[in-house]
Length: 196
Image (cartoon, rainbow, N blue to C red; front, side):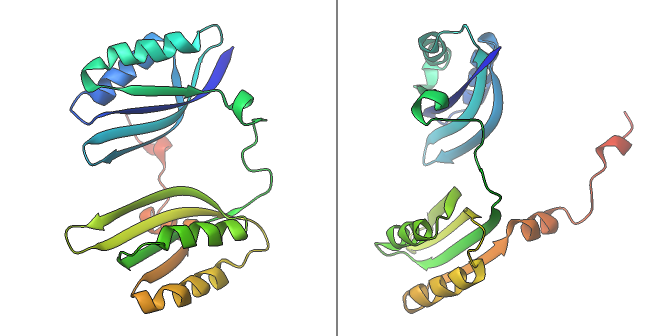
């Protein structure tokens, strides 16, 4: 039997950190189910859903990963979703549509605060967020994946956000995730047809 954990690892971003982390997981009998990794400034950050043997002590997992990744100054956290969040194995009980919202323009205080409150008002979940200031120009670019509940008009929301940010010179666009996936992979990929 395997036990599910949510693990985060933050470390110095140097060549070899992922190899060290993968070695540690393998030595513990761990398996990544879902992972997101990013480099911010000079730091490597990874969040993952992992499975470990049920009899593996959580403190042993943390200590072992820290030891193997010591050269990178790794900080490790391990969370048990079944205890901490009442996890029942179902992350989205009702079907939701996925959209990608992008904003770009001059940076100013309060943009993220307004946006987060506006999305929460309609029960829209922010699944993924990527953003950065572009050089010394103080222009920002942000892209976020949204999980929109049934009954919410995403196009109306986009128009509302455009009106809100228009005077600040901020451009807002919204695309359904299927459209973006179709642009990235216009033709089906047939893995079974590849000869070895």
